[in-house]
Length: 184
Image (cartoon, rainbow, N blue to C red):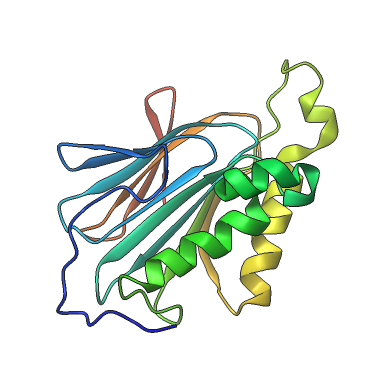
């Protein structure tokens, strides 16, 4: 795949169908993603329960992206995977990286962090399906098979999380109920 020269600065635009941008803040919904190359931008997503946020950032070209996927494998719903590939880990993670490559991200420099994968009780038996664990497992497997190391995680447990990725320095802040849980 060809790469954009690091000196080329593409405008900040949300790249997923449901991502929205306002005032340097890009919000990513469930089953969506965004990639940007604006030093003043922050990419955020909210209410990660069993979902996983895959955060990537290249410190040389300052390109970052965030995927908020809902389910591990696209074979669960091939029609939805066709229409919304970011909904699934096995189709969303490659889409996130391929989009970031067009903005100059280099896989060897990428800092990757994972957030989410909780087992939230009281969701009508959803935790009995171990969706959070399955989501985390598929993310780790896909990244490992492609030679991508995970630098940090805030995963598992039973609390919902929100995430923000600062494109100026690659910091990933994780919060729950408006309290900071981690910086990874």
